[in-house]
Image (cartoon, rainbow, N blue to C red; front, side):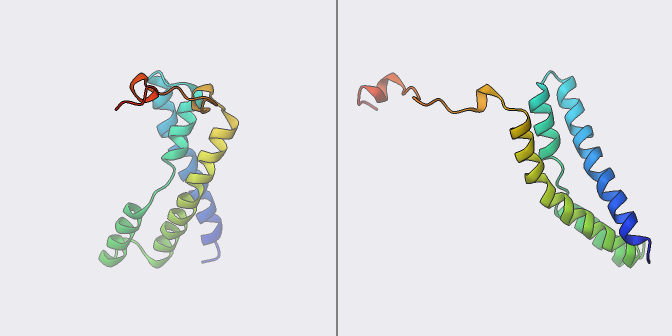
Length: 116
């Protein structure tokens, strides 16, 4: 039971890296920019309720013990919290001129003339 925190930390690190790489690299291979690829990977980091459902079923069926279930809970919580933080960092580290709003947005001609 004393190894559970270190195992949890290792699994969290692997979970973060695999989602970043497993979603970011294919995005890059499909022609997306580096900035977009990192953002895709960061956005996919969250595990959410699917991991909880699978862990709950595993616990109920006796396939997963309490330690494994606890690790799944920790991984789910950490990756869910990490996703928006990584996305924010990805947008700060890789600024993209296309995502900066224009100071004077152009209106469609019909709206500029007052029509609809």
